[in-house]
Every structure is written in C-alpha cells, then in structure tokens.
Amino acid sequence: MSVRPLAITDDELSTCVGCGLCLPHCPTFRVTNEEALSPRGRIATIRSIQWDGLKIDDQVSEILNTCVQCRGCEPACPSGVPYGRLIEAAKNNMAAHRQTTPWWQRFGLRLLRHHRLLLIGTPLLALAQRVRLIPKRAGLSRLPIRLGPPIVASSKTPDVWLYTGCVMDAWQRSTHRSVAALISKVGCRYGVPSKAGSCCGALHSHAGLSDEAKVLAQAVMTSMPGSAPIIVDSAGCGAALKDYGHLLNTPQAHEFSQRVCDVHEWLEPHIATIMQSHLPVMNKPSIIVQDPCHLRHVQKSHLAVRSILAPVANLIELDDDGMCCGAGGAYSLVEPELAALIRDRKVHNILAKFTDDSNIVASANPGCLMHLQSAGLIVKHPVDILAEALGLVPTTNRPPTKGSTK
Image 1 (cartoon, rainbow, N blue to C red):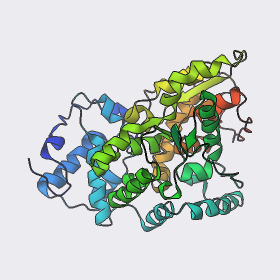
Image 2 (tube, helix red, strand yellow):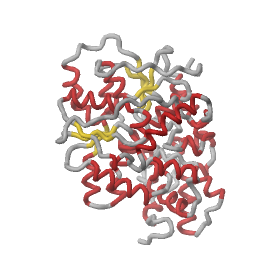
Image 3 (cartoon, rainbow, N blue to C red):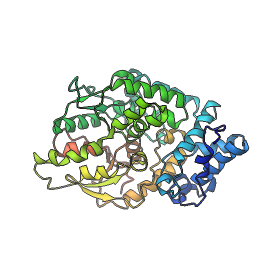
Image 4 (spheres, one colour):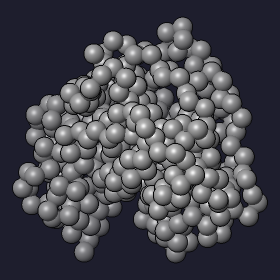
C-alpha cells in the first residue's frame, strides 16, 4: 500500500465510488452547482494530484481552497470516505508550497499562539470595528471592548478541566463563565489550562499548517495533566482535541483525546440534578437550534444540546440536515463571497422558522455564532441560554439586529 505525494494511502482515495450522495450536503456545491466544487469533484482532483502528478495551479488551488471543511459529506457517504483526512492532506501539501493560507492568515494564526497579545489586541480590534475600519464582509459580529476577569480555577485538584482556548477566551469569555457556573452547580471542581495550552491548533490544521498544529497540541496536552475529563465549549476546539490521537499518533495523544467531552455531552447526564433545585421554567423562550458542523458531523454530539435546552426552552428544529452556515473557522475571512452565499441559505432557513422577532438562535461554536450574528440574528451559546434561565449568570443584552430578521 503506497503513500505518494499527498501522504494519502491508495486505499483511502479508492473508497469514493462517485455515487454523488454527498452533493446535496456540500455547501459550496449547493451555492455554485459546480461539480468541481463538490466532495466528489475535489476527490477527483486529489486523485489526479496523487496518481497522475497533476500540477497544483491556480485552478486546482481554487477547487481545493474553496472547501469549507465542514465534513457534512461524511455522514452522508455510504462508503465511509474519510474526506476530512483527504482534504487535510491536500491542504498540508499546498501550504508547504505556499499555495494556500496567505501571509496575513499565517500571521494571524501565529498570533493565536501568544494569548496575551490576542487579549491586548481584542479591544483595539473592537475599536477599529466601531469606527468601521474592518469591512463587513469579514463576517465578524460586534467584538467586546471589555473582556472582564479571566476564568480562574476553582481547585488545584480539579474533577474536570475547563478548556478556555484562544479566540473563545478573548471574544466570548462570558460563555466560559456560564460553563464554570454549571460545573459548580453539578458539584464539581474545575481547573483551567496553563498559558501554554491557550490554542488548540484547529485553525492551523484547517489551513494546512499541520506542523504548527502538532506543536500546539503537545502544549495543550501538557497544560491539562492527569486523567480528569476535559470539557470544551467550542465545537471546533472540541473536534480538534478529540483528534489529537490521529494528529500526533502517540499513546499519550490517544489517551488525551479519550478524556475530551463537549460541554453538552458532559452536562447531559447531570441536567436532571441541575434542574431539581429550580422551579420549572413557565414562559419558555422559542429557541431555533443551529448545529455547528464540527459538533454534528465530526463529534456527533449535537443531540445533547437538545437535552440540556429542553427544560428551559421550546426548541425549533431546522429542516436543512445540518447544512453549514459558511463560517468554517477562518473561511469567512479567506472566502468572503462564498461564505456569504452559504450563510444566506442558512439565514433563509432560520427565518422560515421564526414565530416572532424575539426568537433566539442557539449555536455552540464561536465562529458560527459570530457569523450568524453579523447577519443580524440574535444568537447565543446553548450554555449561556441555560445558565441565564437558571439565574446562574446575568442575562446578557441581545445584540441589535440589522433589519434582516423580519
């Protein structure tokens, strides 16, 4: 079984039989109707690179770079094609030859490794946003000027770890406070990672920078020693941490990945205990549930979101089989036109479910949340909705809409 230029085995590439069942689940195919911009089309391109020595020119780069890497095609595939592995290998090769991930994106990703700089830069970025120096096509919702105090461990011998991350800690720290309050409500003590483990490397992996992702993964593993479960409230980060076994392929990495839990799957068995000390919520708000791709398609933990929200909200389901919203990590920055088209489809599906202007969208990933907020929707993290409903944290003000919701 040979391994050729893209570090993909022939067996992995041969699993695709070209049936086309993936096409309706691919966001870029849905908005362009171009075969080349579908999983089947991209696999054909990767095969030509691997087997026929196809040169990666501008056209080939566009075909591969425009993939959101949502992996919505994987659950739909009857042959079990490991599409995420295939596109990741192709992006790694392209990044090594500077055919993807422009310099400004590499610079930004390098900044994520220095958490203090990110925290200092966030208020400055927020001010630049206020004076309209950041284009709307970047897909960013309103960034916070005041971050508030950092999350501090409740014990030096924690029952669980609360992974805080980089962007999530800088831009959505209040969600960590909600998680911390819920962990304490369960009766558990929590720790937080050391500064060395502030970035999980998910965005680096998506960008094809696997060597940098591996360095960050090692640091994250060191920052949360022991055997306690690791709770993650960002779908993208959780998927990355659960994939460390594949990324590093060491016994330690496989053991670490087994400790990782999405916050909703960790809370699910505790929700009855949490609700025992609270009166039933009478006037439940209507919540439209949007599943982040890396929660639904990769972690497959999306049903737990329903379990923790059901006691405090009337849930409204979308009819789009978890179609991507177009955020895709940094995708909305590097492919703003396609990201906006994909988001428009998602927003249309959400608005079709609105019962009134007070409807809230629940989304468990910072990128999805901000991407949809920038379209004028009221979007909150599920754990914020739960913690606020139970009075564990103050109710946050809703971000103003831009007139697109009704």
